[in-house]
Image (cartoon, rainbow, N blue to C red):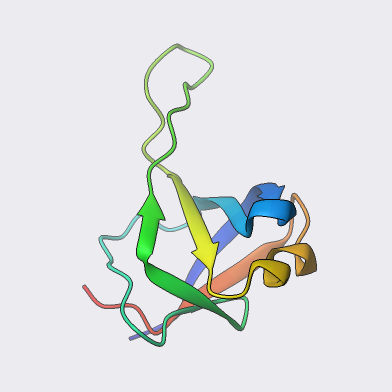
Length: 89
């Protein structure tokens, strides 16, 4: 599968989490071996954070990813474009 682009919105380095916006709408699921920006993800820890658009509607383009190694989150910063690899439809 081709890599999916995301833009980092928020980093919680101390917790090993990152919230990113999907730049290309696509259904996906994480599996063992999935990586974000080259860093291994915990495939059991994909969440959809609650956030609202400017018009008050729920945002469905945000995803919260958790890295296998907590310290990996510190490699990212808001605005950075990264790729999700090793995902499945």
